[in-house]
Image 1 (cartoon, rainbow, N blue to C red):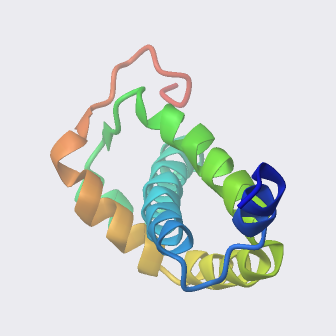
Image 2 (image 1 turned 180 degrees about the vertical axis):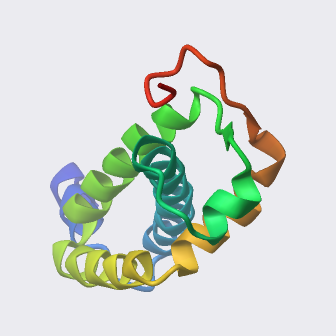
Length: 126
């Protein structure tokens, strides 16, 4: 095998390859955490009432969760390079789960141990 054939094989990764499957599950989990964080910030800024607001009770996620937003973009770009058709279908699927509260609830379940009390100096606290 030449280097060229190896690179071509990487960029034409089949959907059932281990790398694509692991990255897809990781992308799903990262997006669940991201949407939960976004919902918490929306609730604090705009005062929306929902089940998440009731369960969070004025608590927020730590600052390092912001890195998860960037990790989501990195995983998405890698998936896009590996198999762009599959990535588009995955993006639509994740978007559908985002509209429904499924990702929000999954993110809440995963991040519940990391919730902390919101400080008064945070921008959404007026």
